[in-house]
Length: 107
Image (tube, rainbow, N blue to C red; front, side, top):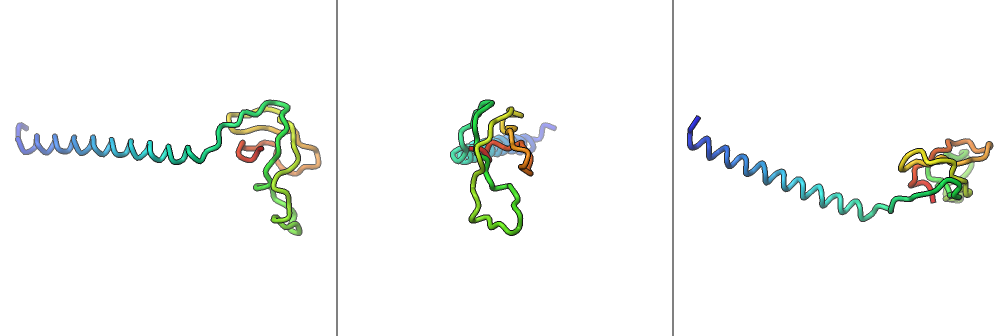
């Protein structure tokens, strides 16, 4: 296996592989910078804080038009933090949706 053509091919192949890895890493960093520009800073709500809930994912009766409805609903108290991006809120008994919300739906 001391063929000089094979050794040259192998060296060229390794060089191209390193260039491809480098280009992929640069592309990954560029995409991350672009995406992170538009992200909101991490919200750190505390227990007992009052938060508004977005109406974006809340289904309404068919006779109510969305464009005339509220964009956010009443301030509710934070009951607990489930994980980094999910909060559990204290909702009244008459509310018909789940009490866990992603941070992007809270304000």
